[in-house]
Image 1 (cartoon, rainbow over the protein chains, first blue to last red):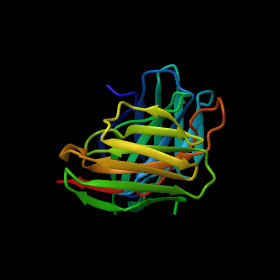
Image 2 (tube, rainbow over the protein chains, first blue to last red):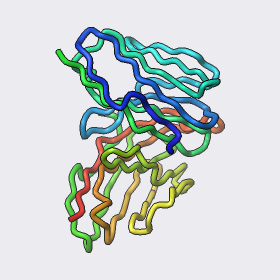
Image 3 (tube, rainbow over the protein chains, first blue to last red):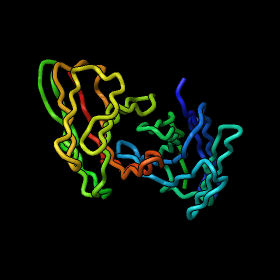
Length: 110
Length: 116
């Protein structure tokens, strides 16, 4: 199986609720990144957390990293309909490879 | 606008055609990437170029041929493709700092390829 796997595969919530997505990986990493993709478009970088960091914030986004469990979570607070998209984690193995997971499809209903 | 431009956005080709995808980055980055995105699959890294030199070929079939004439341009030449090659092909660039990993990728909007 692949290096990064997101959970859940799909998530539906109402506007104003929080959305939490999880990512698990298998090998040691240099950093972990989260990206967003609107349907049929390119990916947009959201946040990068280094292996020696445990938590990072950016606006309504909060990312945690637990290297002992090889897992990360992305929390979107007070979600909006415009947050509807697919969200991917990507692990940087300090090589030329940035390996992406399968993604979580988030649907936020007005 | 991410600073990475891909053309064409959509391409339909027969299995015997030869076509090319183009990517241009205006960010001054030193690394460029091709990814393939198929339905219900993770993004697949295809090729990586650092300072115009190919540093990664992720077991990609020879019917896909990359070319990187300079740090700002990347091409993917396509010939005798198969229907299963239909996918969204994404180009990305990054500024690699030695020993600090790949860093943030900036993606283009992708080229949607359909092989008939």
